[in-house]
Length: 114
Length: 111
Image (cartoon, rainbow over all chains, first blue to last red):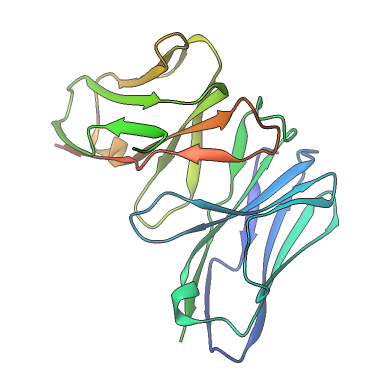
């Protein structure tokens, strides 16, 4: 199983809603990443988890709250988002954070904030 | 100047043509990734390189560490190769897992 599964694929939410994005992998990878990608731009790193612990937060606003409940699952909790937060949210995994291994990306969750 | 520069930014080819996309970087790296993204879709990792050359099907990736340059070649291109190709490097001075991305090369292969 070399897949990273992200759900939902599409999400539309209002600025007062609370929703979550989910990322799941069963490759035993211990590094998991959240990226945000705006149209026609490269991905921007948001968070890095290493062995279920948050190791990097790229100064992301607190309306985005990551969670790694176990080694297979990564969540991104969303609350009080702004329309400019509309983007493709990508999850990626790797064997470690030493930047020497292949990365596996999910298909992404496309978020629209109204 | 960006730390990772790709060229060309846009590329149109006829089916069957040999295609080369270039990536130059200015930092010391521990690895370089070539990624593919179809319109509206997620990202697929094509290659991870730290030296030399790798081949997978019609795709070939090379890297020259001394010159800080990598190329992605597509032989016998096909319309399904139409996508954005992204070069990303792992900063060798950091073990944070952070990648530095190029701006991407948009490839269109016409039948």
